[in-house]
Image 1 (cartoon, rainbow, N blue to C red):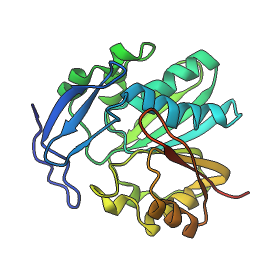
Image 2 (image 1 turned 90 degrees about the vertical axis):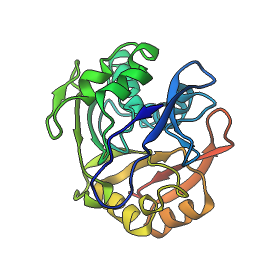
Image 3 (image 1 turned 90 degrees about the horizontal axis):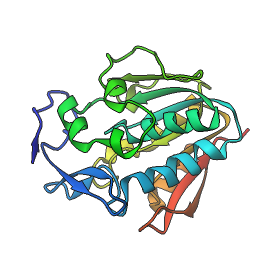
Length: 232
């Protein structure tokens, strides 16, 4: 079991009983037995991220240059896959990730996404001081900030949002109308939001916030996911 130091920040407290587990595609994730929750799908951590965030997000936009916001950096898998895809497909991305509860370097090393996904140095990216842009080659940049989505203050800033918080049953304050209204304002007209979550209540909340949200086929082991667009 991987023991984490207690987090002193208010609100949600990240699990301290994380265990590294192998998923169906051979990649690793972290699981909390106490919460009965994991960072990625047990049906395949890489497979889930590729389906939800890369194929239904990054590669579906039809743009060569994008501003990407990730809500919930976690183990950094989505960032790593995005940077790898940028190098393969010659995309240019400015990638901002929000993570109020960053995982320590020892935990990131244990999950070892960098070996599962060749093409980027994940620990080096995640271990950078927060708030600093770092070039990732071929015109892409990465930055993370130790802040919550409730602190997001942006207007028409992003083309694509990866929404990867813990599930609503575990972290309900991440799936509220106020949060999605804040994200809506941060999105440009025509921008897209993708998330693994497919709950009807979440979709209805997105609709209330002004997003056009639909269910689409989900990753392995899951019938659906949500894809939402800010109207033009």
